[in-house]
Image 1 (cartoon, rainbow, N blue to C red):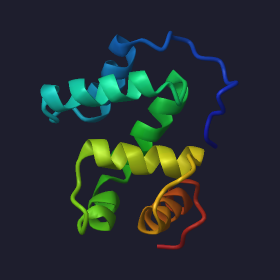
Image 2 (image 1 turned 180 degrees about the vertical axis):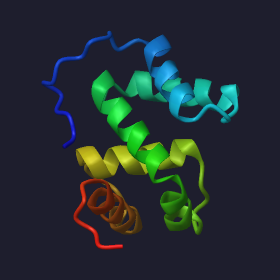
Image 3 (image 1 turned 60 degrees about the vertical axis):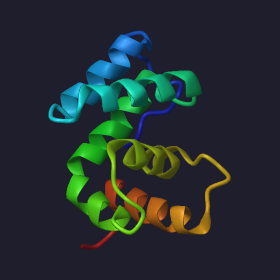
Length: 115
């Protein structure tokens, strides 16, 4: 079950904590890539720290699946995070293709898809 924004966060939503989450789940990703993504996620203020971790963990656990889904448009952790946060927390105004990918990812993460 995905955490809501009302769920208690043990740690504050800081750039350092967001970066720690990304580095924990993606230890081989370039630090410059993570730094840029952390800035974007921090500035967006869309999700709480526990929600960010839920999305990043889901991406990490479904990395190969997402690479396959996103191959036509190009895969990166930043692109996967955008799709993942859209899928799991329903941000509006996404393109039809993005909606299809996000829906498939959401169904997989939340256990509604048969493999």
